[in-house]
Image (cartoon, rainbow, N blue to C red; front, side, top):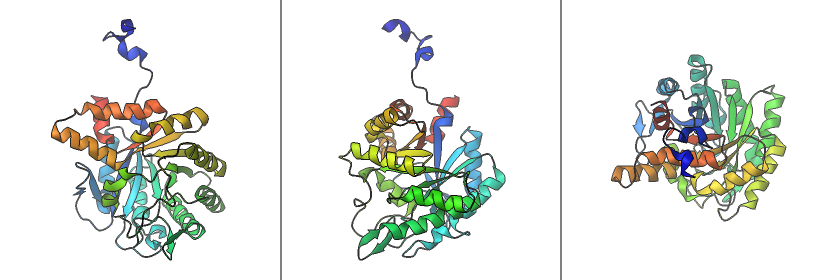
Length: 315
């Protein structure tokens, strides 16, 4: 077996290869901030002021990164997250700015209410319960407002039943037939999300999200979720988190012939960064980790390591 592991032969026989084109860059767009603000629990990652979002995209494009997923931090919140679907909302403004300067950039917009609501949950709340169907009406409005601004792909992340069907029908009625849907199909109620909640100011004020996000003990359920979203019109399905759920990515790849995205989430990023800073692991772990996600079967990887890996791949 060692014959094909010689230094000048190894690359020829690699079964999985990570490329810059596989990576999607998350950007936190802050409507209030005037300067880039480092996220305490995500060393080296920043909230980007709305006025400087095109500068961030430019830096990424120069590294060969062309796909971005946007998360908004609005200037104000309310019970139903109405800032999320306003045409002059933070994401809508960001999309228009980016598309004006970089029309070839692939812009994906996260569709969820958690960062826009005073309670921090991903849907409409009544008497301490997250209401599914009432939330669907709002996410349909958000999708249309993002499409109108110029988004290429919308990505519902709230794990409401029927969210893909609602968005597809709403977009089509408004003649946005070409806007694709990347559904957070198998999104687990994970403990790896905590740094994100600081980054997006989306900490929930009561309870948890276990009544709508998946139980991390379950695997078959993920395949049912994915199958339902495909039937409802999803163009891309996502597994989140990635690193602790490689088995789910592999099972999905074996069953479904559809593009699969994996979200290398904030807690995974923070652990690796902490290990590197302590000197316990080397920076090579970043590349190894993303290669493992690709090897498991992901076509696309959303990762906070994107810029570092792009520099590594270009070197």
